[in-house]
Image (tube, rainbow, N blue to C red; front, side, top):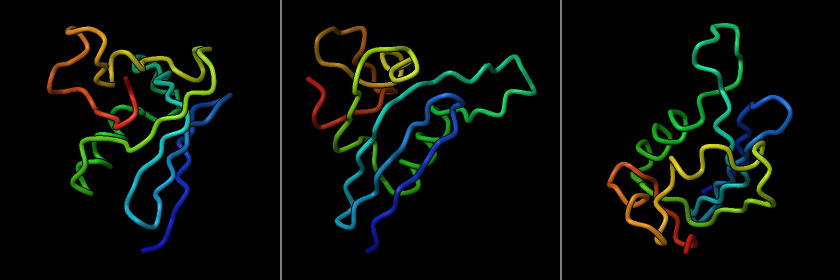
Length: 102
C-alpha cells in the first residue's frame, strides 16, 4: 500500500490527513468552518468529508490526531465531531473515535 497526504481546503488554514502505508490514519488539525448558509463558500464540509472517507475504508476512527493549538482555525467543531472520554455528553455513537484522545 502507498502512503498519501490529503488536503482539505478550509481557506486560511487547511486540515490534512496522512494515510500511512500500513493503513493508519493521522489527522492534523480539524476546523469545521464552512458556512452552510452561503452557497458561495468553497470550503469543504469537513464532517461530511471525513465520515464518508472513513466509511469507505471501514474505519470509525483516526489513529492519531494532532491539534497544534486551540485557535478556532485549528479546532473549530472538534467537540461536536469527536468522541471525548472526559464527559458523557461527548460519547454518543455518532461521534468519531481516536485512539489517542483521552
